[in-house]
Image 1 (cartoon, rainbow, N blue to C red):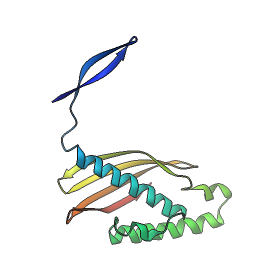
Image 2: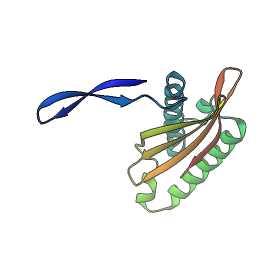
Image 3: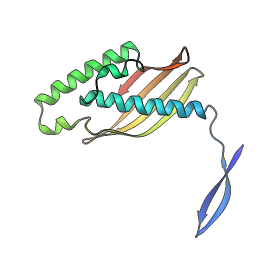
Amino acid sequence: MTAVTPIRRAGSAVLEPSPAAAPGSGDEAREICAITRATVQAAVEVLAGTRPIHQLARRLDQRCLTVLQHRAVLTRRVAARAPRKMGLLHRNASVRSVRACEVTPDVYEASAVVIDEVRVRAVAVRLERSKSVWRVTALEIG
C-alpha cells in the first residue's frame, strides 16, 4: 500500500508515492508513543522534584517505581551539595522524540530523547500489556 504525498520541487508540488507505514504501526504504535512520551516526561519531573512519584504508580510496575524513587532521592541529595550547575539537572526537561518497536503483540520497547538545561539524555522503556492496560516494566534514564 502506498500513499500519495506532495513533494515540492522548484516551486511546484509533485505527487509521488511514499511507502506505507511499517508493520505493527498504526493506532497502537501512536498510543505507545503517547504513553511513553507522557511517562518519560513525568519520570524526569520526578527526578527534578517537581512532580510527586505517586502520580506514576498506575503506569510503572512496582520495581520501576522503587528504582525511580531511589534515584530521585539520590539526585536531590547530590544536587543539594553540588555546585549550582548540578542543580539544573532535570530542570525544564522536554521530550524531543519517541520511537517505538513492537516485540510481540503485548510487548513494546520504546526510546526517547530528553533535553534539559544541562544535557541531552536517552531513555529506554519497555511496555507490557496486562489486562488491556499498558504498564512500564523497564525504565532506564541515561
